[in-house]
Image (cartoon, rainbow, N blue to C red; front, side, top):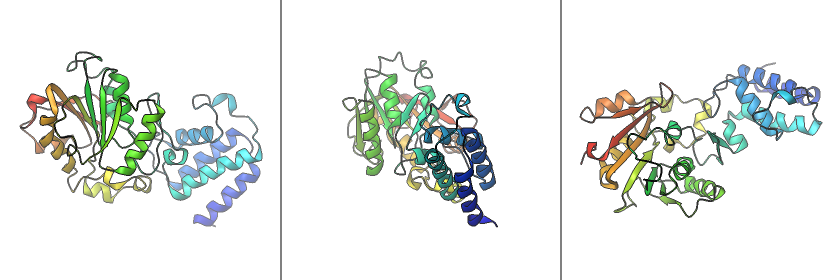
Length: 307
């Protein structure tokens, strides 16, 4: 027996014979490894993904696995966990779409398939990584998050800069519906405004002390090679032409007129650092330490941007 038939049989057998958290965790890791799942939406390995899905499905604390490992579960609880594990294997859905949540640091956000799963390295830079360019957390009065998606970075901007009014811009109306839900969950509707716009098109004369963006930047060849997990995400939020720079070019062309005199632009480009530098040899990019080799984030001051 192999393929889907084998999987159906194994999951059915698991419902009848597994009884503890430890049982379910072991079973999940085995099935995930056997299926060759791909990670990167909150975890990077089978064990962490399995632990997250088991704990979340059982409504247990995500940071306290050990005390519950040998707890015996009700048949309905086992079945609920198996349902989630089976869907992860069968449909190759990212875990975040199964649980409708994603985390950036200590912040939890609602997500579904209208938005990509939040995983921006800009999040770790907002609290302490910009002090050389921004005088203090009280000095930002207006901030902009371009390509906001779920609204996660706009919300983090509002927390990092308590005096700031934040515009959260996206071209996708469905994505902005998710952003509104997250903004309301954090009671930030008076400070964070979702705006449907193709980048700066609807922003007219607005200017900002800080503009951040985690735009689409995946090149065409990489889009065509995406594993199934990533194909569940909105393609327009990932791909940006054959070289992956279509959206970044437009941001660099238009950002200067929307920055205040001492404003700064912060853009995440993933593994595209070399491509960006080759395309713009005249620009004096500052590359910030975002904690990973493939997490390139550049900063430009207004005066450094093309006119």
